[in-house]
Length: 472
Image 1 (tube, one colour):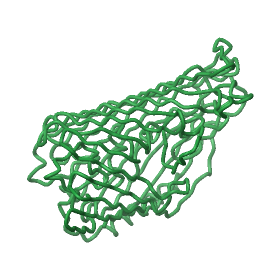
Image 2 (cartoon, rainbow, N blue to C red):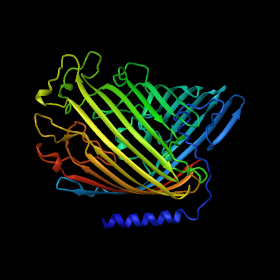
Image 3 (tube, one colour):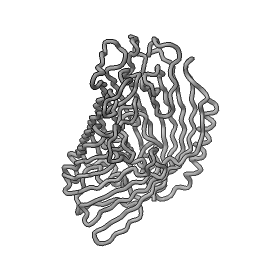
Image 4 (tube, helix red, strand yellow):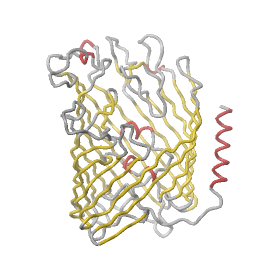
């Protein structure tokens, strides 16, 4: 631990040196990730924000914005028990994000477009992160077609440039539904006071992994038969109410002194239904054998996810709370019927999570501090005929953290320093592809199955991050 605290003190000193002297901050707080995500705007009054380079001609508008995040990360892994690991520590510099967005309207303000390019790549050979066209017909009704970030939960929908910590929380990374291709109907009722914001869409839905039953449709898909996409569909709905006025899509309250004395709060509800095929012999042994004539696997999953979140803003104080629930049921097709009474595989999987973030601006609009508490209750289950619930796809996890942000020019130029402690309860691997983690690949418990999950060993991580963000 001496190594960890020495590094933490060094990073804190560096943050102080980098952040002085303070520079005047602009009042720009436009979220460039949200042209329409927060509900439709009146076409006659719509604006794209005040960042970036703007070009305008008769009937056409283009705004180009680039966001870069450069980060120093130190991670110390600590064993807690005989089956834990230690020594997988690292420190490195990393360009965490480098993205350029093009957005505007063509012919008329009713016809809006957006393309977001990720210069680091999407990990699938594509640099196209988002590409969408919106018909902004009315404040209450808009239609968007293309690939966008799925509007399921608040934290994921907030731009990475408007996060409280250097990165979104662990529970968000477990439950968010990533990017999706499809058609979304969206809008809001009430202009100054959005009594209702809604998003409803139908999408491809592409399985994130054979032990990760979420959508992740960031790749460029061909228009030919594919057992990855065809017959895999997803329906998503999100509702929000902002009864005291619009709450900006951010994880903190950076309103000016003239505005932040007004109490604001919002409540959101998200629902997502996703079905697809999958192949994981440890979860469903009947995946082994002859595939169907189409080539699709004989096993499928059916996942329903919910989230309920609340957001409070007053005098630079922000409170963000969210609850997540996900239930996955497994099915076998055709002649490979499955009898769950033999306990050779699992019949369902249920995960829950809670996130809690609090931040306060000590110096209005210039300097804030915050805390984070995330709790993940991942399902343990029996397998291989055992009666013990000691197998798992993910470990139960607790994440706690503190953060300080210095806004030299709002989100346009920002320094972030945070420290996280992450505790993971180890499980026996319940998947042929291993156990899933967020900050590392969690080790699994050693020895034969049969131990009690309540007595599992733990794997703990200390994470220290220093990040500079600039948007231009």
